[in-house]
Length: 408
Ligand SMILES: C[S@@+](CC[C@H](N)C(=O)[O-])C[C@H]1O[C@@H](n2cnc3c(N)ncnc32)[C@H](O)[C@@H]1O
Image (tube, rainbow, N blue to C red; front, side):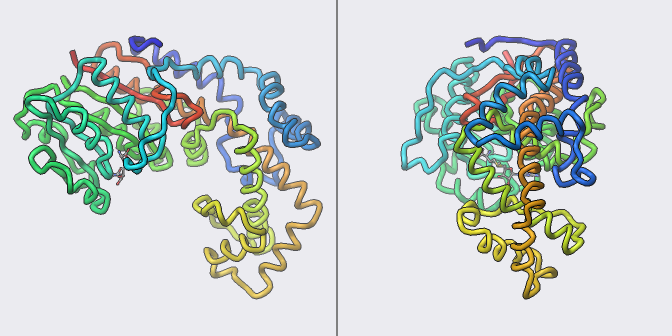
């Protein structure tokens, strides 16, 4: 446990460079969707890996990924070391009490941020819960500070009125709800308007895409900040260019989506599930392209998992509802025949294996993006900042990277 690792601008830049050097040679693997490789021909190193993986059984595959990938991707050891972050969490995971109605992950996140706040003696008079959604954090914060005198207040900001309504039962004296688009707000004037004594606490707990950057750029200085990023695919496409240093990696939408998944090593159960999901999704996507010359982008990621638990036919039926223009009477039969061709089956296996390999790059991408944000913070504050930290173990969720700045 080390909660006081500080890092200066120069060290952050050199970390960013390390990631670039490690990742650049492999960019082809993660800067495209597997189906977007022309004729599905991958770079030679990747071809070699995929060929070795094809004959393996699932249980052998897991070990292969763990052991062999480390040897074949030369920089992998370094990537592993570079993605290590100081942990700040203390406890084993406990499940939330039923009445809390929140996921284990959310419960743990909130608890750890509150612990951190108390441990660092940074409990504020005023919390700004930015993109706070249903106000889950604010609610827990109020509970933890019930005995305070004076009792702290909070401002909850979100653009989603339906979520905000869920906080309507919280104390009217203590809570101000702002229903607005975050980007329209001047955080400086917002905090000025509240005459409470500072420092205030600005929280962005899974603030979507560019909101995290906005918060880091705009939170009024001489305040506390705590931020965990979210959904990179909601970052603007010029995000790299907006950054204080050049981003040399191609942060395409695919790479950002990959980073958003941030998967550490998959256990066998998740691996099997992912195989099943892909073995349904890929033939459908491939069929749309090959048989129907479909050129658009196919996004079926939002399918509920029960769809994947049925048969391929059921899956097709549900999937076709999303493509009314290709929904013809013989469509399903054609697609089933297509899927059953041995050549197509081989192709699907290769696609799935390639997808698995790509996931090895999600964690470094996640940390790479987070270090850019930390650099932004260090430059703004013009002093060393606390290093990125893991707020809970990555097996609970890979999105566990916390950026903090406590004003003392
Ligand atoms: C992943 S949720 C996190 C909610 C909450 N912080 C939590 O951890 O439970 C992201 C929230 O950001 C809000 N949001 C996204 N874009 C926004 C914007 N431009 N302005 C204000 N809120 C926004 C969404 O409505 C959503 O409630």
